[in-house]
Amino acid sequence: MTPATSASTLAEVRNLASARTPHILARGVALDFAHSGQRQRVLADIDLAIPKGSFVSLIGPSGCGKSTLLKVIAGLLRPAEGEVSVAGLAPQEAARQRMIGLVFQDATLLPWKNALENAAFLQMSGENAAPREAAMTQAREMLRLVGLEGAEAKRPRQLSGGMQQRVAIARALTLDPEVLLMDEPFGALDAITREEMRQCLLDIWERTGKTVVLVTHSIDEAVFLSREVHVLGGRPARIIETIPIDLPEPRTEACLTDPAFTRAEARLRSLLIESHRSGKRT
Amino acid sequence: MSATEHNAEIAAPDRAWVSEVGQRLSAVLPALGLAAAVLLIWEAAVRLFNIPQFVVPAPSAIAVALFEQRVALASASKATAFEVVFGFVLAALVGIVVALAIVRFERFGKALYPLVVLFQTVPKVALAPIFILWFGYDLAPKIVLIVVIAFFPVAIDMLAGLQSVEPSFVALMRSVGASRGEILRRVRIPHSLPHLMAGLKVAITFSVIGAIVGEFAGASAGLGYVIQFASTQLETPLVFAALIVVSVLGLVFYYLVEFAEHLLVPWSPKFDRAHAGVVAT
Image (cartoon, rainbow over all chains, first blue to last red; front, side):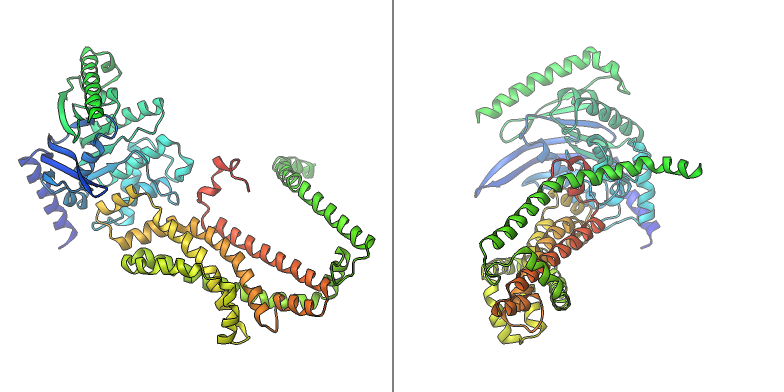
């Protein structure tokens, strides 16, 4: 099979898949962790349908299982029950075909590579590894998109925490994934940098139209960025409520004072407090 | 005129360099002062109490021995240095191979690792006579002894480096379909290099010890041989002189490895400028 035909069949598969089903779909997902010999259910009855190009947040108290759910969507964990699909494919398969871009709380950059090489690294790895030149060109473009033009040759330790996280985002985007899964990507950053990164993420989303799933414990972050917020809680964790966010797009600073913003924020806060209490009781 | 201009141009970096050397000097000055004082007291005590030279030689007598026996000491150093380098390189290779094997072949590693650790508890210095018995009086028993003593820190440190890659990064690599081999080659091995260098620094020190012990057990050349021979002849100043040469040799080798570290892993976290003030050097 020549590269050209494989690329076109791949595109066909993607188109077919997106036409038929929501971009990310979870049905009746449950997950167990083995805990000192005992199986403990951490996720139960998770149903999710995320349309293509949407921006969705998963929010909940720390340790509730929201990161675990993201890992299931990413194909890093296999659910005990139920099924998950990303662009119509099993998550592992979708990941292998580079449809999933992952960003964690820690940038996890390689200290011996510069920003450009780090951004290109994953694209040059694995089964469908791109040739070095192509990966570097894409990575350079993505570094520009995340606002790191001129920092290509810098090693991670010469970059600030926010800049390192930008490289990690560029690394995920270099795969040209269909979905971007982010696990508290700004959790380790200071307040000002966080706000910059939010704006940066919004720009990326608007420009690339990727489907984004963001795990966060910050209420205003979830409201400001998302079209829909899923609140997780309880033990095992379920989606206790899904809140659509009706704010004008593109989102701007003005949204922060919009009555809809304040309402959604207040609703989420009371849900989280409730979920936090119910989590403590068990 | 142009000369003074030129001087003015380089004056700034020049002065910075001078002040840095000055700072380093002032850092070692107390230690140098104390060492000089100890040597003076030593010399004075030996002369004052008429201590026989074969018991404790005066520093001056050691200096004389160093100078008079310089040819013998130089050729002994050459023999020892050769053993150290040869043994160290082999020990490093064995250590690296053991670490890679443990990580790459999981089952084999599970069998090998406990044995390696168990072997480490054997006092290997005590093996020297056996190696002499097996391999004769030449180079071979010394090399084997060095390898046996020095491979362990290399293997253990490299292993720690190979295994300490962030699990989330490994997950990223696996998710795009990277094989264990690819992750080992492109991520684990480079990640382990700073750890490896730390192991090599311990190994080079052990290598010098291994060479000397090997020569004690039976040799016809080398600094260990000189020390043993001179002590049977009650030539204590020469014993001390050889000791000094051994120490200098060890120091030179150590700094050669440290120099290699700067060249090979300049990105190592230990060279991070932000932490330079925290880590004592």
